[in-house]
Length: 147
Image (cartoon, rainbow, N blue to C red; front, side, top):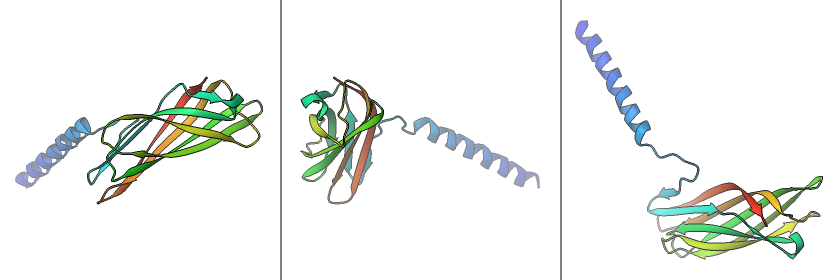
């Protein structure tokens, strides 16, 4: 009976130690890149973004890193409070994947009755790509300055 109790206690202690080690070495953070099957995708929305044509569009700077086969698809959306309403827009492009970080800009056109204006906005960037084994995507959400 005593040996069974010791075995259970030893097993419980081992489980706690292993769990603690896993928690200690687990990755965390707001911009963890997608990595699976040799595919690496990462996107970071940067600030400030540049207003164009009196707020009809915004040029959004991004840093993207990918090693997808061929190219990856990048989408960006912006939402901003504008007066008593909301200004929104969407833009997309393709990027060639080199495995290194690249600076790109995406043109986001305002859609609807409201134009973008100087100030804070919420931007979401997403990158999607595939290699010979798998497909994946990575998203970044940021509050950016429109200037």
